[in-house]
Figure 1 (cartoon, rainbow, N blue to C red):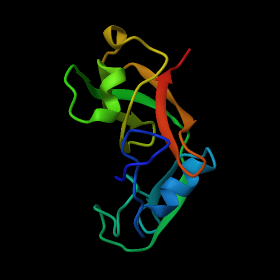
Figure 2 (figure 1 turned 45 degrees about the vertical axis):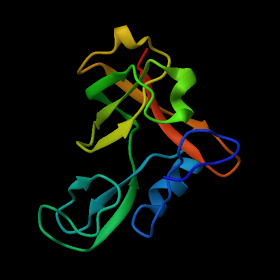
Figure 3 (figure 1 turned 135 degrees about the vertical axis):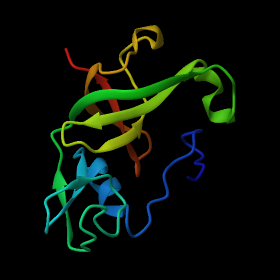
Length: 139
C-alpha cells in the first residue's frame, strides 16, 4: 500500500501476481483466478492452485455477488487517512464462486451489517489511476 497526495488513504501496490486483478478493477471488472487443471476458483494473487498445485492459472470474470463472511467496525484512528470516516467498516466477502476478498461496505449503516448479508460489487474511482472494489447490499 502506498500513500497518495489526492487520496489520503493507503492505495494498493500491485505486484506481478496481483496486477491483473487491479487492472480488472480499474476496468470495473472483478477478476479472480481459476485453475485450468481442476477448475478451482481462488483469491487473486496466487502462483499455484492450493488444491492440485498446478501453476496453470487463468483470470476469469467473477459474478460480483456474494455474502458478508465477516466484518468489523473501527472506532480508533490507526491511519490519518481514515480519521474523517470513523467509525468505518471493513470485512471479508465470500463471492458466489467461493473466493474471499477483503473490502469495505458502502450504502449501508455500520449497525445494519450482518454475516451472510447478500452483497454485490461496486467500483470507486478514487484517483485517476486507481479504482477500488467495494461491496453494497443487494437490493
